[in-house]
Image 1 (cartoon, rainbow, N blue to C red):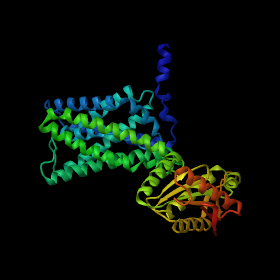
Image 2: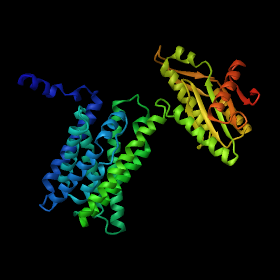
Image 3: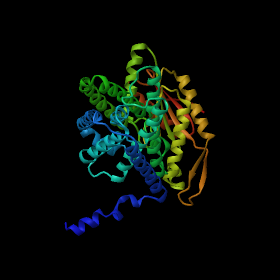
Image 4: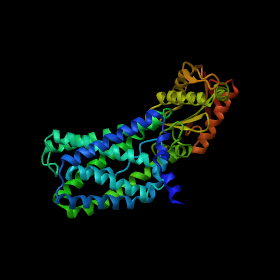
Amino acid sequence: MSVIALCRQLSPTRWPIWSLPRHVLGFVLAVDALAVLLTAVSVAIIPVSWSDWPRFGALVAGVLIHMEAARGIEHTREVAVEGSPHTNLNSLWMFAGLLVLPFPLVVALVAVNYVHLCLRIWRGCIIYRKVFTVATMVLAGGCALAVLRACGLTATPRVPADIWSLLAIVLAAVCWWLVNYALVVGAIVLSNPELSGRNALGEFADQIVVLAGLGLGVVVAALLASYPWAVPVVMLTIVALHREFLLPQFQRAARTDAKTGLASPTFWAQMVTAQITRARLTGASVGLLMIDVDHFAEVNNTYGHLAGDAALEAIVRAVQHEVRHDDLVSRWGGDELAVVMPGVHAEELLRVAERIRLRLAQAEISATDATTGEVTKINQVTVSMGAAVYPDSGTDVDGLVVAADGALLAAKAAGRDQVRLSMVAGPGLAVS
């Protein structure tokens, strides 16, 4: 490639950031500009002494070793969580830096961390996104520093010496998390207005782990201030926790239906098997419901698939509202749901099924008509249901599913919009 061609390719006018919608571009550039301004002001007014550099070097080594140890899985995970907040534990090093370093070195630590990530883990990444992420970290750090200084913790190292200093550091950690999280979610929502709120916010459990990571940052800072030789021991714990933190995200993806957030059929069947095993030992019962939306194809054909998705979401909400917290709902097929209810007998199972049927029959679902683009109302959504109970209808997951499916087919053959209970001798009783 010639020098002229390379210059053209690297020209700022060709950067992907300019393809963003105007409101998203304005938000991203505003956050970046604020981070640059905060960095410039901190460099101008906050001195850095020679005694700060050994701690800076220790934190750089810690974050690089940490990220290298989790490099393989982190690369896959960064791609897998597209469209939701990307959480990891490397912020613990940034927060530890905030507690033991002057702010200009904290910014340098953030920059070193993300340059390493881009070179070693996120190859081919979209640069403006990573610059924005660095900016959010800098602004979050600046807000957390303001909290620390407002609470009287002006000199480094800022480590807990009493209950009040500990509370100040906890408050700063919460401020760091909240600012960073809000900025990232804001960018996601602006860039993907059609994205559901659940996906934009990500998994709440991940955010709890991030807060725990900030707590580990406090531990690292305290060790750096008093017992720096103990930091390598903590490193082993951090790396192990990071790997255990990442793997459950893939486990969630494997056991969750992407469209509805319900359990996948495989995971649901595993849980039914576990519930049957427990019921066999305790003498309890297990109830199963198979739910099929009547004439669901007509909704898709009449209003479009987005309207069908809206109807399915409303049906899922209705089912979840009527079942207990410990019951597990799965998307069994396109418009078919499956529910396992441990410890229920036939009478209670039928009462729950009837409540679901009545709730949906009275529901009014708002959806966008794909043909006209106007919001329309879908009324009188009906469902047919098949119910089965362990051990009366079957003694294993396959037997119960076959029994509930048979009852469901009987309900549909009898005119739909009803519940059938599978009995030992056949499809069994209708409830209407």
